[in-house]
Length: 332
Image (cartoon, rainbow, N blue to C red; front, side):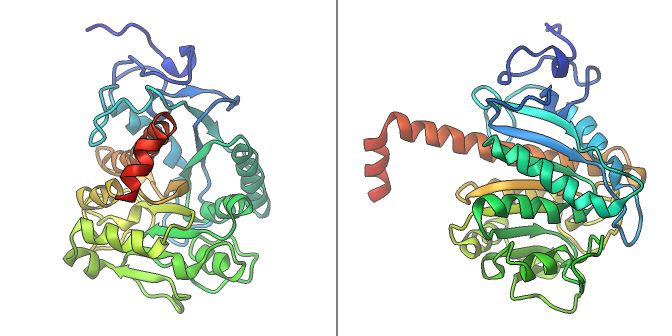
């Protein structure tokens, strides 16, 4: 069927509803969501943070938001797998564009990110951030913790990111240590999945190493995450190098021995009962990618977050419509 409109990112008249752009054309917002700085009425906001000055190996993640948006065009307005629903039928999502950073003064970066994230969170919308290197998660965590208190952290990663930190470093390998020391996350409710390197300290965070993930079923990994977070408000950060380089070559610090995209997507699919209050996908570096393999994986992770959010919105709506029925079912 011929497309009934084009460039939905600019021509959309509503924040809900599917687009009709062909996958090979049209403005490349994330999943064709409307580009706007007006987030009033949005259930979720997608925001790019094109920063990679904190890397310790290969740069290039500043192009991650562009690559993820481009890859998201493959979601061609059908009901999204595996959620079997149009995510935007009743859920309003906007693409807020990118964070404007001072490229000549990186010490300003965390403050700029934190302040703009705080402004977006004040709208009441769920914030889905596209990195950028993993340092950007630090100011994002601070902004979310200011709203929700100390967070459970679910970190999909090949690295612990708990290296020594003096509180001033611009370094993608130390933000977790800083978050623990400053009380931004609760290590007793936090978990790292896919770790395949060593760091000086784990700070009491539960670790599922690469070999654990290899031997475990996706359902067992999901159960470990659910049990560890224990109902606490949770932030999920996904470093694309959690995946084996066979599935995500386009990243700055690839580590062999990781899980497949299919396995980790299956894990994410089973996290619907977690109280996820914010999420990101980071370290996609398209210069090292092949055929958009990594960008497609990153876009799919981001879509999964929105799928879980759409399901939660639907459940909350059902609860509001039929409170007695739901309460009775909950008591069985």
